[in-house]
Amino acid sequence: MPELLNRLEESLGKNISQICDGKFHDTSANHCAHYVSHMAGLSFSFNCIDFKGGFGTPANVRVHEIFSQSPKVGLWSEAIIEREVLVFVTRTENVDLVNKRMRNVPQKHIGIFANGSVYHYSNSLNQVVKCSPQQFLSEFNEIYQGEQGLFFGSFPGEDLELEIKPSANLVSRGLAFDLVKEGRRWYASVGGDTSQRFYVGSETKKGKYVGLFMNPNDYYGPTYRAEDYIEQYDHWAQLLELTGYCESKNNFNLINTYDSAKFTFGFFQLAAHTANDNLVIFFRRLMELSNSSDYFPELGLHNGHLHRVNENGGLTNLEVETNSGPAGRRQLQRFMDFLNAKRKEHDMQEVLQAARVIHWSNHDQEMRDLQVEVACEILQAKLERYSRWYDLDGYSDTICALIADIHHQGRARKSKVRAALRSANPKEKLININTNYKGRINDLRFKIKEMENRGVLGNMIYDAGLNEFR
Image 1: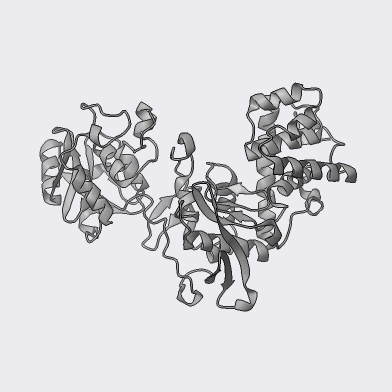
Image 2 (image 1 turned 180 degrees about the horizontal axis):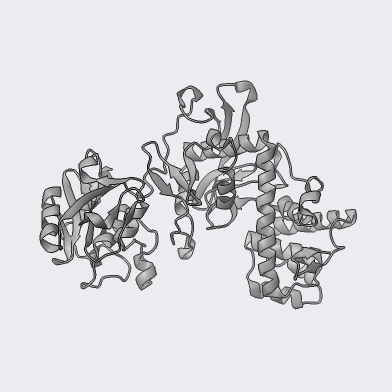
């Protein structure tokens, strides 16, 4: 990473106030992790913005948290020093290498090893310095109590960008996809069988973001129908069909990778950025399917959370939250980056990940059923929450479906919804709640009328006590 080495060299002799563009500049505080995080772009909590506020670049401030988030850790003697790595110093008994844990004790320090030197923030000098690894260890053997140990860690998130091989015959793990671009359209096939080639998506740009999308004229593949799931999910299946129609025309394989979430998938359009919600819940459950390693050999569950499992046995938790979203929104940046590595340019990784979920959805009923199961669980849990917000007991299924759709898309605040419910015509007000979404309004109006004409919507009311319709 030559750009990292350049940043490290440029930082030498600087005070933390010249490095952090936020508000955490206290000269009496320990800034070793804070400095490293600014250099390496480690924004996960607990960071300087969480601590002191402001609108600067978030950077983690805790050594032991960085240690636990490193995909691979070990004794310094085992480090591959031909590349940049993190270097930690503390007493050996403070470290559990097997479980990647470091005790949260005052006597611990962190730096970055690059080009033969350790760059770290000297809290006594209040500036960035560099030295050899041996000098680094010797310095803290003199400062700290007891015999200190030296440890390495790979950079959190460095294993999220995959080495993509566009030809199937070069792939060694999982299903092998051939990826082909024709104009702005991407196609894929499995194992070199071009007779089974399928459409992945077309390149597009939306504001400052780029990515893949499917034009409605290109939609294909299996679709969700409430009647196929009414036995399992009762009336909830109808509410899913309404929002599914507005999101994807109920296409199970629909992707988009061009908005702020970086990756959205399925008939219910589950987005990647939300913690303990939407796409990450779906991916956790995908890992339980027998063919998950065929499609995503790099993923696995560890302590119930989704992890990137790299080739050397390292683990990266994809569910770590960072406040890296628009206006500081907390989001699953690592999960997003695994699915779509580059925000502002088209990359092969997003094409591969899109091809994987599309192919899986096209060919596996169990995967499609899981989409419905997860979407229904999310809808049920959220409507229970909305009922507490708006006291929905006794309201019609149409009103409840509209409120669920509004919040699923995020197109209005609670105050707007409350105002609509107090109006003379709540249904009409809810449909038109944000006129910036004309396409959504038209879809809702059409689909509600069609479903009410069929008698599958508009005839039941919500029972808040039971969280069901009757």
